[in-house]
Length: 638
Image 1 (cartoon, one colour):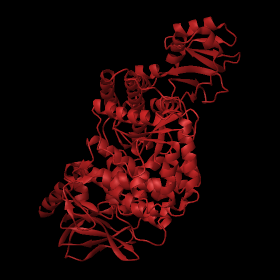
Image 2 (cartoon, rainbow, N blue to C red):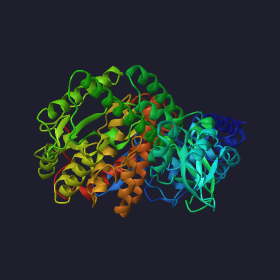
Image 3 (cartoon, rainbow, N blue to C red):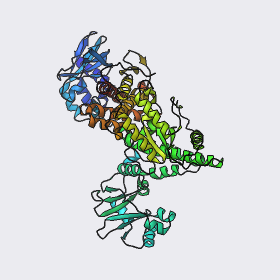
Image 4 (cartoon, rainbow, N blue to C red):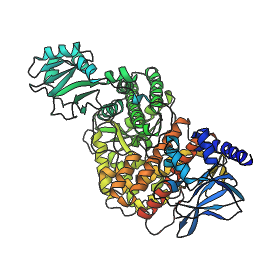
């Protein structure tokens, strides 16, 4: 009778804690009856780093246990565990050895459960498998119950074939245009005798272009996807390339016979969202009154797509395209207001760029971006009044953003820079920063190394980026200086009883996910990009593209994956940092801001974030060892 009471008491305790809350009552009782109870005084080792898997898995019933990692400087505190935490869970995965030592910090009571029986239960419960996987890696872990419209059903091939209208090569152009006008999806395909696509004609094109001009206009072949496409991949392709139509062939090869045409409108019928159309509507909106409702639609679209961390990449792409379209609209509307006020529009080549997170594509909501004008002062077309025009346009563009409710935290321009400068001044600014990074305060100028053109002649921005790449190739000091500055951003140590524990022993009720996860990872990724051997690694895009805005390659996650290929010894560390960054963005979005209270998180979520903190710590250690140089202590950001 006494044994039965103890078994039920242990089972009731286990059921209150993850991952045991996933078990059935029968399995709980079997586990509870398979082990024993053990008592430890303070400062005793329960587990030693490197220990092999034992007969029992130990669960803390009461008290506090610290996990420690051996280092050259001695044992380093890595986590603080309390009631309901399981010690040495990594023993059940990987190589079956303990990754950390576990030492009691108070008197502790432990419940032991049979390792063999627990492993047998793991095989039957996916929720426990996810929990165990989260101990070692964030990659591929699912545990979130929302649905994303990005996973919606796609139009079937028979459906798309039924809507396909084709004409043969050589068909008179008016006849081809008529086919496009009559097509259910507003597009006709021109194919050769083998059924291969040679070009497409859209109903929109025929309405906005004279027939003769439309017939003679050169056209690249549409992007081609295979019949096994999904909603996510199709939208990604459309947004990245700035198109609203994709050709479908059996294997996704352009030399194969055409199977169907997929338009953004076709996708919208099935997923209920039209991101390509929304981007176009924002870009061409005629007033703030038209833009504001579209901004609300943008927020709902991204929110509806963001169901789990794995959706972050696609949601960032959608939001970036919308933000760049919004920036273009604000510049265009500001330009119209200046023209009405009597300003003469310059003819000199110029472009507008964004900096920082907006340039990288690391945002999940519309924010007031840091933007600036670059104009070619070496051109004979430059007029003395042009600089005043661009300065006025920068100020008026900011007013457009303010009118839309996007004020932002404000940006403090460093000495020698401003929101409107000629190309020679931008080159001077980067040259002095790269030549004397410490003297010129490169840490405070770091966001300028994330740059993307959003409006105007993109070749000007690409030329500037090329110059920056050449400067970086001859600078031995900038990367180590930025790397040392990056090392100051140490993440929290652990969560304990709903509080955030810092490495200095401090306790807080909340933490800033931007400060402890996103910023240090983004800064380390930037350092690795700047350490690259070519300009593409250091800048935000490989080639200029004319599109709805383009989504350039060097966001933080892609920078880290690029670094993993160039620094194979850090492959695992860099890839885990990319996953941690994705997780941080996800929680920032679903929490409605950067401040997060651990007491409001489930145990599984706390575990995911603790694993992410550990990934940041490892990334900073690898950054310091690889790029910071042998001399100089980490410099705290001021």
